[in-house]
Length: 367
Ligand code: DAH
Image (spheres, rainbow, N blue to C red):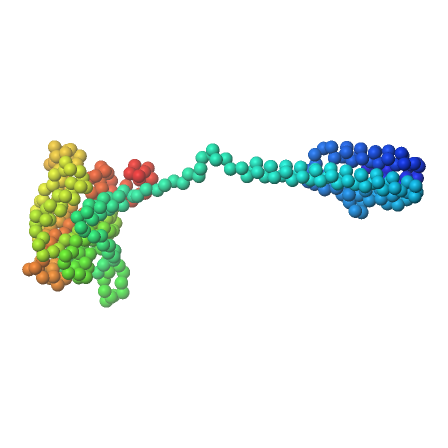
């Protein structure tokens, strides 16, 4: 404060009576009112408080030192009274300002932290099941409803389980249809391979328990094929096996027909065509009326009206020999569903590679 009166004594200021003292205090108070007329922020409030109430250099300390302590005994009561009034006014006003600052800070913090419930929430993309998984689930649902249970097996097998015990001895021509991935093993060590079909689980299951057996085996299989529209070195199958004391070819046919109708729809008809698999006798290919032309004949079914679905048959008694089942007592049937093929027919997909390229534009169509 330029020309600050509080820096001088009353005598220096020429205040010789009570009225002069009261006037001086009035001026100081006016000064205070001016300085606190603009709403301060926290920092300038602290500066104000120091300037007025600071113990060492505040204006009130200076008044005490320069005015009160040097006042004549006659003026001292007036100075003391005025000083007390001024102190009360200064403290009250600074208190008010402090409250206002705190309230303002709180209000702006609330404004800053306000949650706007009208804003859209965080949207997390929801994934969906891969088409192959959907077909697995479809197949499982149908066979579970017939009393089958789902088992899974290892993707690595020995040649015994993948071939021999399924009645495919070494040098059997049926092995030629399955170009096999063998694992690298030290010379002389037992051989391992990536299973070429899910059929080995027939053998594992029958070894582990006596009939009745009713299982399906969904899983991955591997063949040494070059990828193209109809080949993949990895694909999926669902094996099926039912063995009991009284299973006939009628049970087999009924089960197969029920499955095809449930999977492809009630209009589809089936037929069994003679075929050959080493582990079934008789063996069949299950055909369905073409899903694309309804049996009239089209490009897909090569004008025949029929399309091949999967292989199946009655379990060859030779297989029972490998698992110590009594072939005179037990009979059963087996089937091997190609999951990619069934999916292709149901959803009209013309390239096997689409399943595995993971292009979301393809996958989203079936979400
Ligand atoms: N394992 C055969 C394959 O991968 C498919 C198959 C055919 C399985 C007939 C069966 C069956 O259980 O009875 O080519």
